[in-house]
Image (tube, rainbow, N blue to C red; front, side):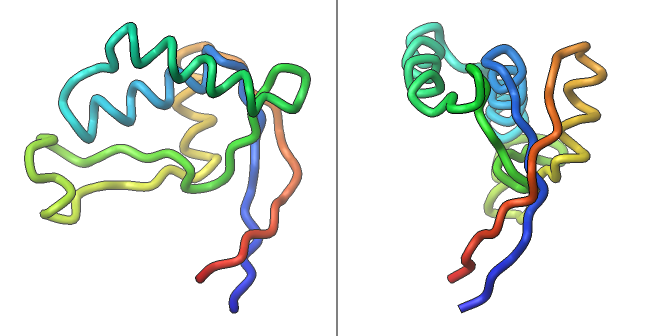
Length: 107
């Protein structure tokens, strides 16, 4: 069993949604529907333990390089570090807070 220390950050709904929708677009070539958005918002609220913010860690989100078609099969999916996600959110002028490092057990 391996333990890895990951960086974390806390994000409100709007920031998390921006990352999720961008990830989905890069990987699938489309945006989430309103129904999916509503379901994800309810789910987000269940896990927003940090004053309405959710903690995310390195590699919890990611996108794809190039055309989404067959991007997974061709190994073009990417994983975003917290630094990557901070840059994405800063460019969109969306808020985030620094989080504490988190230990994760790798299988």
